[in-house]
Length: 219
Image 1 (cartoon, one colour):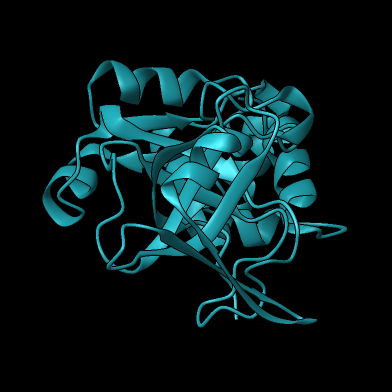
Image 2: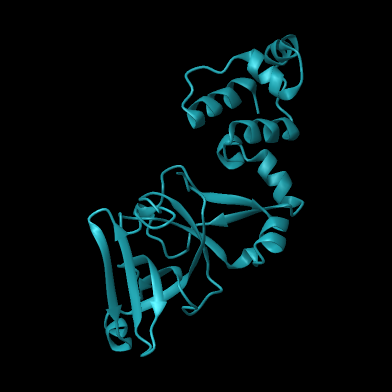
């Protein structure tokens, strides 16, 4: 990618009015003159350099590498996994200019203990989990493990109606009578609702999976 494109992307992603050549040179371990030369000659950043910039500025490589050259190379080698939106998510709920979350395959398998093929992402809509013990705010991107097909103990789960017109991201707990308690933690107050199996059938409730990570988490 050309220098001007990379810098423009970085400035947009970090909300920084101007990123200096000297700053880029320091991050890449080269001289300012080397940066000037590559601008003059139209030399593109290497994959390793894009990864260094992505790590330093804490920006998603997918959003920095808008031409998808480095992502394509890495995915081809099997090192990086793209976690897409849940396939049933309406387009109007998707975050503009945000298509996926990337993660290292070995992290997903060895540290999370999960199969990458079972993962998808959804955005939080509404404030029902804002005051949860780890806040989930509207617009936060959540990674869902769709291998979880039933509620297993307390946890935050993602469910929908069969026709995908209603969505729930709530802490859910299965009770002794097999009813399910939905817990919300909104600024207006915590609310617990209990649904019997029959009531869940009436709203065509379908469990999609369990929230395993909030990639937008911030204090």
